[in-house]
Length: 81
Image 1 (cartoon, rainbow, N blue to C red):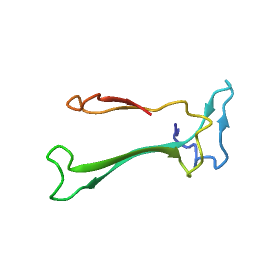
Image 2: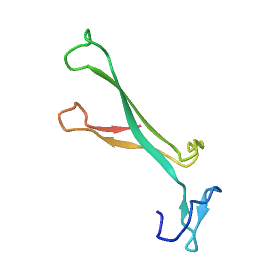
Image 3: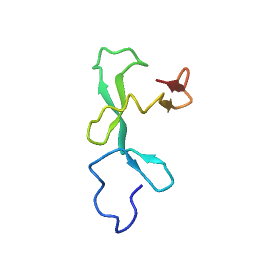
């Protein structure tokens, strides 16, 4: 969460606020790679999803699981990693 006039994010993390909540900046997203003309009709791309620290920090000790919600047309559209 960035508030107006708050300035740049603190490079030190995790950040603990007055109420004791811990804030850790992170990045998430996906990347798709086209598999070429010979790919199966419903497997045209290879997908990679990621969740990482904003500066590539190791978050494994902070994250228990990540839930991805895919389009309902996918088999098992809710994926837990």
